[in-house]
Length: 66
Image 1 (cartoon, rainbow, N blue to C red):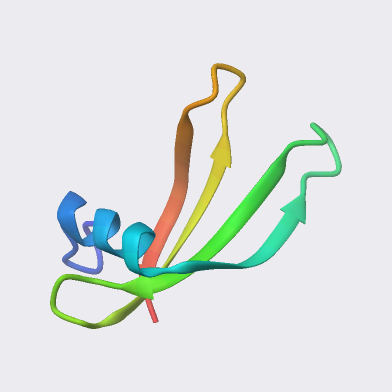
Image 2 (tube, helix red, strand yellow; image 1 turned 135 degrees about the vertical axis):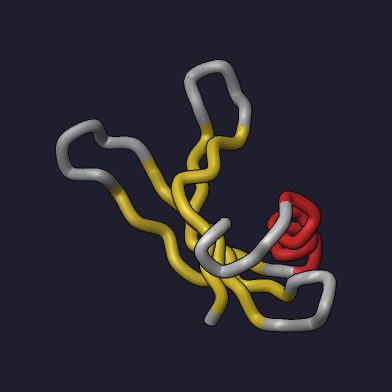
């Protein structure tokens, strides 16, 4: 996130404007990860990889600009 100059508000925008484009299953843990494509506040395309924790909260694994 910092390497691409994004703020937490850009990440939030990617989630709110985006859609899940890929679902990946971790072979070791069996957990599902979700790739979301959306737009930053400035309208730049970006991706976020997330998962749902055991407590039901969204965990951000990584984010980047496309």
